[in-house]
Length: 242
Image (cartoon, rainbow, N blue to C red; front, side, top):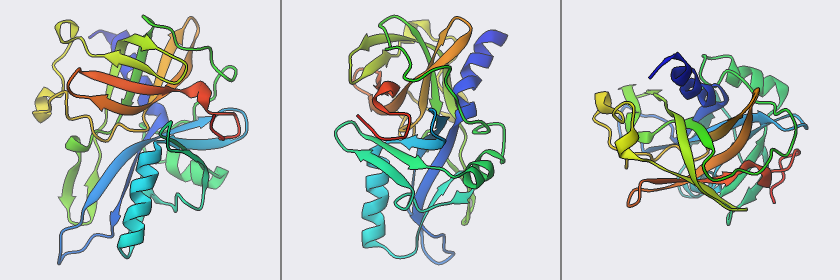
């Protein structure tokens, strides 16, 4: 992969932050943790975070059945239900209102997730089949636990995948193994099917002089090596959905 490919692969991660939730860590018992990805954007009405409805739903279920549950975006603890703008189960999308103070705290930690994406105009043009998409997030299988109360979330991204199908409510990218430039996660003994945790990650399409925010990852089919996205145009500038 050349310098351009490396930069394209890094691009979506500038606007993606890991999110995780679970019971607070304890030395005396194991703690179950789940993670996803939050995309940081400003579509014209202030910064918002976008993730999947199933991420918020899983947190809500855990909070209803366990005590002392924590939710973090990066290293910042938040209550996603208190800042929830909209949640759409059928589209599997959820949006969060991020105050200026909160977004500064979230983006001030590292290069990854250091920026809020502001599109040239909104909504972006519809995604077309055969366009090239870049996307990324934080696969669960890469998560590291150095200490009982410490988590590390390595990222993963694709610097160029062809849009296979495109519809009003979804589009997809099928991984073409014969065209891979580098082996998928070989240093981590990671296989393609191990993409849990990317839910909520952003996809962008390069269109001439700029990138358009194209969609949000919501599902992966291990059977067919296909990653599915919800088109970003389903999200309004104020964070409402549909």
